[in-house]
Picture 1 (tube, rainbow, N blue to C red):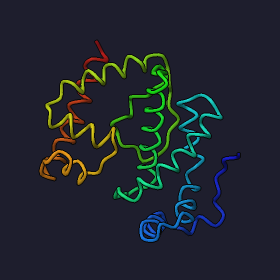
Picture 2: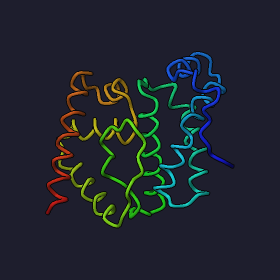
Picture 3: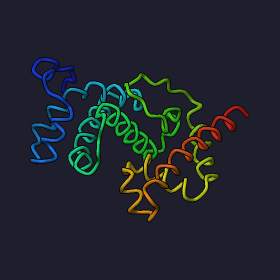
Picture 4: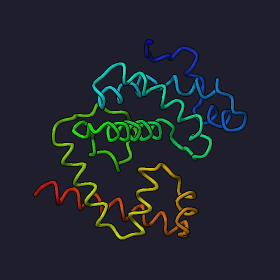
Length: 192
């Protein structure tokens, strides 16, 4: 299996049109065309997390399978950024399940990136994961629930509001404030 960037024929496709086509028709060809544009980047992120080529290839396929259902229910404005978050979360969950927490990158977990980046992974990541988990516990309940649902469970604002019963504007506020408070807590505890 080779992962190469396929620019020929894909350059004219607009991500939003492909997403709309997939959502409206369920056409897996549209989703495949869209995913193919970014598959090499997904593979790179997976490789940085797993440090294993075969496991990373498997993850690329698993993430595509996740896309089949998740893209239908999420409102995606910037597919590349959204896919990066989805990929990172997939890797984090896989690493947690296999108890390889020392390879987890937490620095960007709650920061929205517009580009895929090569992640520096070192032995301090396990400590950062512990700090993040402790900081999550310090958040007020509304912020903790909203941040958990939005970032870790990849729910959209509407889904968070439906699940929690909070008003949509409150949800956005809880997520924004929770993210800020979490960042402050993590920075404070990381410097100690």
